[in-house]
Length: 169
Length: 141
Image (cartoon, rainbow over all chains, first blue to last red; front, side):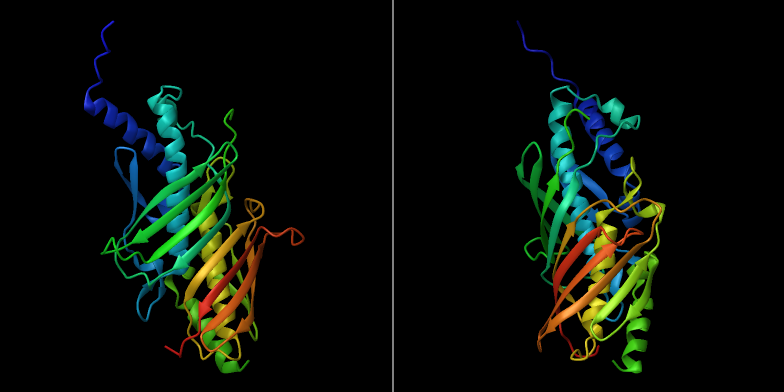
């Protein structure tokens, strides 16, 4: 039996991007903060474009610690959800059309979240990537790092624990 | 705490663009304590299925409240920045209800303010979240 011919790249990309957009656009607070996600294969980079209303200290000016914390938490939750969805989309156990039609999966719930502020957030765009360090049936641990102009100089990092949605939902 | 400092703290909250964007209101400020209220807003929802507020909005509320408590401590010259903040989420806040955070700066050195906080909705007997953090102690900016 010959191997099935691979799908055209545009079809694969379109399906993955549509699933990601459905996941991200379904959450009002992500839209409120203006966070978008850049996808390269299964790797996501969260981008929070600078806006005046994200400022915490207008004298410096610097990003609000709460905006930074929210950015990291959003990155962790979407990163964790995406890693679960990716597998289910790729093995065809989840139809991305359903996601696009609004049947969104239950999101992981934050149990705890710890943010370290390494330097003040500048009035510039911020980027973050999450790394799922452990993903079990019930609990997951996620690390996140955020930077601005210089990838080697993160301005905040975080670690959090999450309660996973039940698989039969 | 001096009347001067109360005024500074109140003005400071009003002058924080992100806290203003989230509709925060400083309802109490004491000698190392603060209370801030955030009204329910559909734009802050994190789980579209349940309408529960996003943890990030609760974090922003906690961070602002802890910072205000640190600043208001009699031993603080005025300014502060977050060093670290840990939030524990006990339960989802009930959709439609405001969230009220109370913070207390329970220890302060020349360099660091140690702060804890809790957040409640209308049911005050069961906190929605608790927070502990360390904040810098800085000269008035």
